[in-house]
Image 1 (cartoon, rainbow, N blue to C red):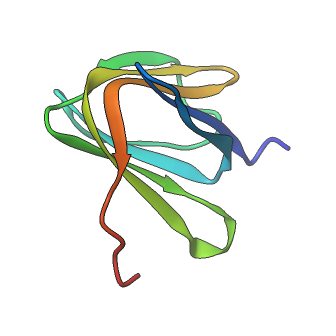
Image 2 (image 1 turned 60 degrees about the horizontal axis):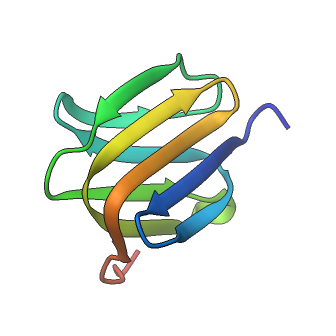
Length: 93
């Protein structure tokens, strides 16, 4: 479906999360970046420390604290390659 974004979050140790999302938000060295389906291709360096937020259908958001790494947006989706990625503390939202 064209209005979904394929997301892969990968750390050095393992594939942390993969699936379809509405949007991904990441903080890069250039600032916070929101990636929606159809985003122009880009490569960005993640800020340290940083957090990746993955917005799913139905309003659910997954958040991961990441250290080091890169964000790659291509025609097929977005891949986050991090040195480490751990689930962030659950928020009330």
